[in-house]
Image: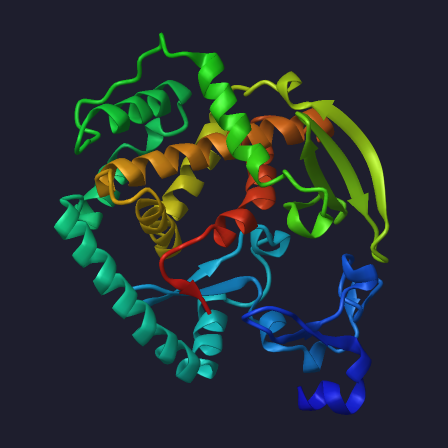
Length: 335
């Protein structure tokens, strides 16, 4: 802040509300950062902490973990610095702040586990994750997801043991569930409140849903929005994956299964639903909804961009989706 107050006080603003803080202004209040010119940062050596941390997200739960934002195209190139080393250096630079947050989040987790035990919905998280990992190749099959979702509603404490897909499942119902999950995050007319897909050409694509229709717009560097197309959401079917797409999706599910923030989202869901369902039921249910959301987004991107449902198409869907996944509400906090 000392740098900005001295050199460019007009480039920062203070947010309103309970968690008021200073942040950089955006072009027209919704476009790119005012300090981004020709897609390059004009103050790179003096950029603030948030920019230095991207694409790493530090999460405080029972421990501090670092998660990589896969919406950043750069992380898919395999080029650049070693991610683990850079994340470690960033963590060390913020150690005092992280330790302080960890004390608070650890207490929240202790209270949460106490409520779960009292409600009789506590399960072994390690066992849940191991069971999912052992069956991970099945999680790209909508019929298998349908079976899990049915079992999670029917059984007080579900397992994946002896669970086989039922090909007589209601495909239309699954498609509707996938579409509803994806559209929930697009239901705003404010471009600041909808997910952004950074296209292969580095374009900023916004998708806004209203009255059952999806409008695709592209935002330029100055914050101007140009409508590119529109479609009835029901005209986008949940498309089948090809083998390379299934493999890419299962790799992403493996990443989610290891993320502490995904677990925090499961815990938040249990709290929101009043501790009625066992932890295992909620965990597997949340994973199924996540996968369906991603698969429908892949279908939507294929509709607009022809990205397909193979490895490339699922990678593009992950680039579109992962920032939303990291923004999901949690018990615990991103620091």
